[in-house]
Amino acid sequence: MRTDERNEEKSVEERRVRICDIAQELGVSTATVSNVLHGKTKKISEETVRRVQELLEKRQYIPSMAGLLLAQNDSRIIGVVVNDHEKYEAHVLEDIFVASSLNCLSREIEKSGQFMMIKTTTDREEIIRFASMWNMDGLVLIGFCDADYRYLRSHMRIPFVVYDGYLGGAERICNIMIDNYDGGFQVGAHFREMGHERALCVSDNLVCVDLERYEGFRAGFGGNGAQFMQIPMHKEERWNFYREHLERLLGFTAIFAVSDYYAIDLLRFLNEQGVPVPERIALAGFDDTPMCSLVSPTLTSVRQDAARRAYLAVENLKKLKEQKETEAEIRLPVKLTVRGSSVKNLYAEEFSHAGFVPVRKNRD
Image 1 (cartoon, rainbow, N blue to C red):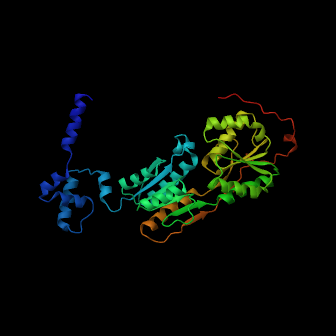
Image 2: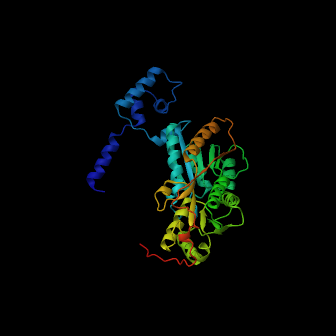
Image 3: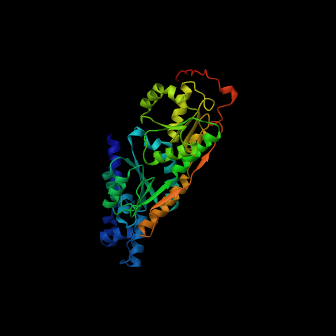
């Protein structure tokens, strides 16, 4: 740091007004000034409050926001904690479902007159420290497991709601889910209606949310013609897996990916292999994030109402904080958004020739 920069920094520090300066000038205690700053004025005369406030404004006192929030009974901070799972490869906030959820939560939290703070972690102890450090009014937790939620509930006084938990009605936790089974069912039924007889579901696991989506998909499709393929979480491994199993992929005329992320990723892989979508393979995802309308071809996907879920999250946090009764589980409906460019009847005569051979395209 140059000498002139150090001098300027020192000058700013010297000009900064402190609580003790205000107290000394008014002849009151520093505790009185601090209480006025923090809104704790019940035991202070109106005249003293007025004098302190006027001098604070006149001297352009700039308080520490963190200090103010921590000193208040209500910090007005809602923490949103997202599981930084390995499958996101250190890009969890770039995931289209997570980003869409955060966008909606930000709007609802701001409308409620509160502030949003975001944290990503895999460590539940960090969640406890994060919430306590900022004296939060509540938390929204996304992507953790049943054991984490129960541990946090027993070790934390702060109210929280969760997205897509599997809790079986745990006490003092509001679980806001979507109808994953019905979403999968709608995809399966749509594929069947379009004339498909062999369909595949792809996911990196077969538990909880993804299991419900697959089971619904099989039921909607009719059972025997629908199969499951577990894919690797990491992209490089996943694409190598797809290359090794390309022949099996081509044995299906329709593929349901349990998330838009995996659906769009598979679309790019198929494009690279010269496999036309939807002419050779129909494709559908889940979540109906904005990217579904931006890719080519546009993607059929199951729409969930992220704005409604965010609204319910904020409303139920308020109820929990006020110790009012809330539903242990709220399950929101979903609806298939059909975009004809990614799902067509593949039995049209011009695409039924048996000798199709994929042509690998050059990478960019």
